[in-house]
Length: 259
Image 1 (spheres, rainbow, N blue to C red):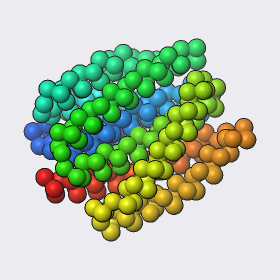
Image 2 (cartoon, rainbow, N blue to C red):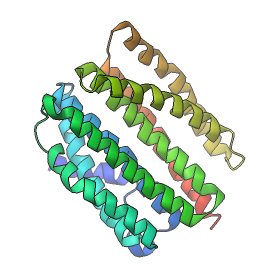
Image 3 (cartoon, helix red, strand yellow):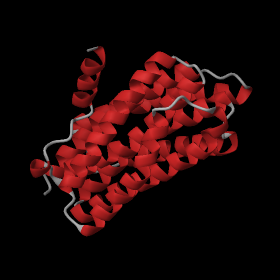
Image 4 (cartoon, rainbow, N blue to C red):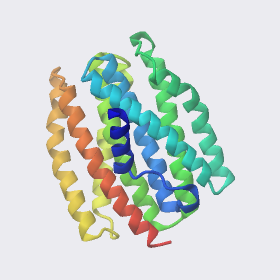
């Protein structure tokens, strides 16, 4: 019962995928963008279970994310308005069919590196779907929905890479992902702040993210001294995720008004 309640809460908070017949392009970009985030969120949870970091909470989060990814993939496949988009979604499904099986198994440290590589392939495939839908929609606001949605993914990618470094798995690639994700998040946040399409509500929300983002980088620097604080990073990136999720929804509304 607790699982069902928590799953229902997450589904609502992450803007549950609408029925295929009513999904517009703006919603499709938001939903497909959330698949990128979920790919990294699932991997983060998987690593947290393996590294024994709040393992019970991580298992619950993993189960919820797997269910949500599955549901949204089906909704996007029903929505797909072109052969190109259907082809991209088929590639996601091909990777996902194996990936989900491993996610539901107990983490094996000696197999994590190859699994993380598959996870990167899943992320890239999900990103290809977002790009294809944004190109199909072809309105100015589509880029903002894409970029703000990508910020959600980056928050989880940062956390995922941090846990991998803490657990000493796939360390070189994880460190590169960690550094690249921080740099891209910072660059993208500034780009969003400079958009002429921003409403006062969006500007205020972005300012709150910027304030928290600036503060959170103190925690990232602790790692340089060999002091890892995975629980703190997990909580911080989780908060940023939900703030960016709200902002993505606001951009979705702006885009829908342009259609």
